[in-house]
Length: 428
Image (cartoon, rainbow, N blue to C red; front, side, top):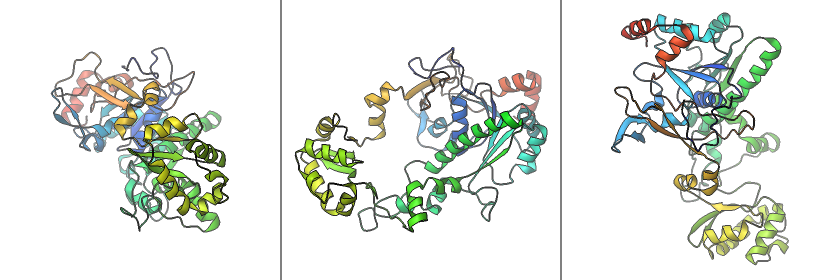
């Protein structure tokens, strides 16, 4: 429908990799919508079902709220924009029999359904996997829950913060107990929700590929706790194979030194020296002979002698401004960079060059319906870069129910009178 003209993702002639797919999005908040936004960015026609009058919870999760034309905050939270681009919003009350029937009819025409209700929560509406797959055997049905559809915790509600705590992730995030500000710390974004959305995207694409062979859809059981345990990665592997229970150590790395933040003359910077060659080049550029010291010549030695080396490096890095260190090291293949706040990150030359800020209009003609005050929406571009089937921008994160009449007319053949009748009953 609309896209920023300067966006590298925009191509009016391009056909998305998933443009042949129809997705019915019954999910809310972040993990499910993150998954369906990925599918939508790659071209899938995603219909987002929202509760009339309220919509997705994240429409109200603020501040920050979108400002109106005079700069005053509205009641529209910015959170929703993060994970609902390229979707069409349809309001349906699934607690009503007529609403349930509308959703079933849409599911019969869909390739994929994504939902994140509590385990068994949709069965009473006849919108669970068994019910919908009986109507559409080719349907791929992805359920996102806190703990999965099996096991003793299956009935529980699960939230990112809770799962970060339960999985051990918070036990390895933050400063050590004996340091200022020490203690368990959550990651600054809902990282388990985001990872779950990405894993769900992958699982759906795998199920679609399997359907090419079998002709049948299947159920995908995505659990936040499963994902959180998986993304412990090397920390999990260290425990499973060596019995090592890692501890919090701030911005330092348990197995690589120096790989952390350092103070500079005017602030701080990040050094990510991942091998002995990089360390030797750093030392040569900085005019020190530490690479020839047997304590520091190898990464294993630097890990053992961390407590000696890091104070020496910090004393050295304080002698120059951050920009001077970056200029000194950038052509030496020594990873070094600033520690930006988000505003600085979006203003970075590389970020701007890659077009990672995209602007869209909900109503390209500028004619906002009565009661709507938000048109321009800015989001972070998709990082998916496909050469032949690029991501395209078709819909801004929609206003609540913005596409209800359009979708019900297009998909189900409902005329204006029938839509009005359903609105009067509170179904839409």
